[in-house]
Image 1 (cartoon, helix red, strand yellow):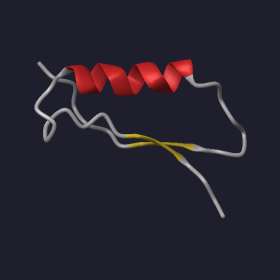
Image 2 (cartoon, one colour):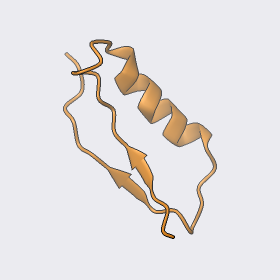
Image 3 (cartoon, helix red, strand yellow):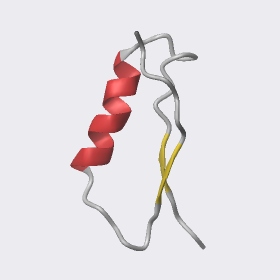
Length: 47
């Protein structure tokens, strides 16, 4: 089984701009794992 880390800062459907910040914050808090590649979905930051 292959596991990935998905960085998906979806604030648009959630309706809260803090979701964008929270997704990026968690990606920095969790220690990196060489067996789990980070896959990022590029979503424009809230304005």
